[in-house]
Image (cartoon, rainbow, N blue to C red; front, side, top):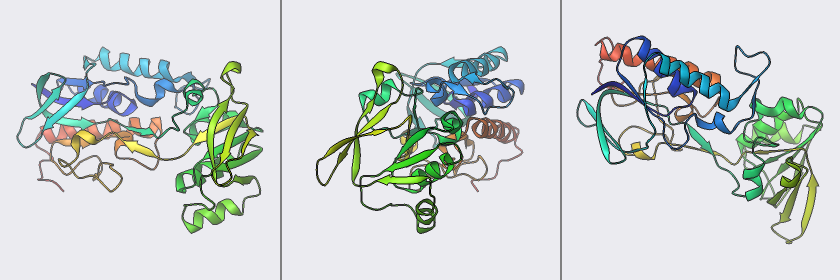
Length: 310
């Protein structure tokens, strides 16, 4: 029996574990398939407070994990395969075993939808990114491309114009899918140009260990061309890791957990980080919500916040 089980081990989950263990709650962290979350595939992190010279993503997550371990958090490297939340305590299946817990903090995050190219995988963190606010600064004065045509892509492209000399939006259609206001913002920006009706067939050049160009294919004519760029930002959407909770707690149309603060629709279950935050998706905001979820769980277990739902 645990007081709190935290599902996910990114900044949100590990910060929650620090707080729950400092409150002397018996805490299990189920780290899952990608311990440390998306920061483990991020090279330089320059926007996390306390590191004026920056820090590598894997090192940052290792430090936060060691801090949680210092306070006594237990870790399980398995994946949650099922949850029974109809009774209290809750029951969680991790592989072939089950554990009981009085509260749950869901911090499973969300994953960028990638293009699925081998070269994309090889060049992640070496010019291929899914976060302009994280990595845009590294492309000051350089040429970059943004893949996508929705609001997220336009937000990324507009933000990147603060740094890049040129931003090219690559979109498979002949017009943007973003809202009219977002479209106008992009179309009026002189630093943004477009490759319409185009898809990315390859990213060059893994042999040089850096991005040098995109290989584009026009979906109407079949013509191929190379677009010289120094960086690529993939903005074709994110998918929250909430599959195991579908039909059990309230999710929005995109699959994100609906919350009031960090409380979900089920008393005793809380959410932290990108799994309920589709707007900010930053390590520091995820860590902050992990703190809040831990405090909310502590109050729930103490009987101070036992209202049925919200």
